[in-house]
Image (cartoon, rainbow, N blue to C red; front, top):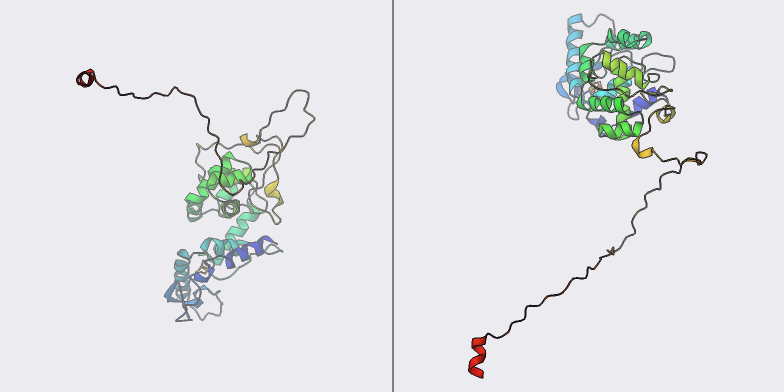
Length: 290
Ligand code: SF4
């Protein structure tokens, strides 16, 4: 599946897609459900037939952007609109998508084409997009990416599942003006550092000999490619005995599920001297009986 199609299905399969702001209101189909004061036509492309004055067009687009700002699928919508077709064009070159105007999306495309270094990318990124790259989830992914090179460890460190972590990595590439398909982990971190999105105090663990892709590619294979010579996570380290280096490393045993039913517990009984309290009649009690 191409990255464009993947972005498209990620958008329309989103569980909140039905609640997107630009969908027709159920009671007033010509009004947007995100704000019934806004027409559903507010997101349409400019027709250039001079029927709409510039001020009317600006007001219409501003209203659409305002609704996009509180749309539950805004990030997914933006990612799709910024994705590219097979011949390298924007998937959605016209109209308002994800709160972005066509000009901003074209600038983003040009930046991706021309950005060769983090500094070059930095010159084309506006402050709004940098703020979006500083959300808690994206910061968690960036910080975890700085200290981990394995995608599962990145996701674990960021406190989310692998798919979500990869999705944030992909969005970060787009927000920071990098090519989502080709940008490496190191490029993403370098760009984030240059733009001040990754704090200076965060140490970046190097990739090793092979650059690690920062975003999923079409078939996901680059996500699974590990860098030769990189430090293994502690859980993977195994002892190799001298003279037995030729032996393959033994995979860690898979954890088996415990059988159902009551569990027995071994209890070790410790022998201890038993003590009894023996009550003897007091002397004063025996005397009358004698
Ligand atoms: S973000 Fe996309 S789906 Fe949501 S209101 Fe804007 S254009 Fe519609």
